[in-house]
Amino acid sequence: MASRGFAILDHPADLGIEAYGETIAESFEQAALGLISVILDPATVESFETIEVDLNAVDAEQLLVKWLAEILYLYDGQHFVPVKFSISSISQSHLQASLWGEKFREEKHVTRLDVKAITYHQLLVREDEAGSRVTVFLDI
Image (tube, rainbow, N blue to C red):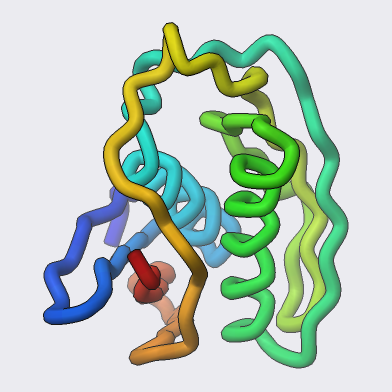
């Protein structure tokens, strides 16, 4: 798997994201971009500000949920819309990243769906010689 990206998955009650990359960091970054693309049109967001994120978890699956929950908190709680993600350090239980974006402005940013939470339903984090893939479902 030499490319990276994400796909939105249909589910009866939720909405899923399947993200992939050459490394686990790339698949986490693509999952973050997938989350933002569900919430609003990322093309309407510019990278004016930077926020640093440092997270700990018990395993890679919880780390993925915490990562996306942090991005959702930044959007809902801090009104910050990140659209560029760079994970500088990642292990099974720790992640450090820089996020670039700007404050949410209703007159500028085109919203799509309201995401309530990141779920553990059908959660998957996989990395092998072919690359990395993660699957996560969102409560909408």
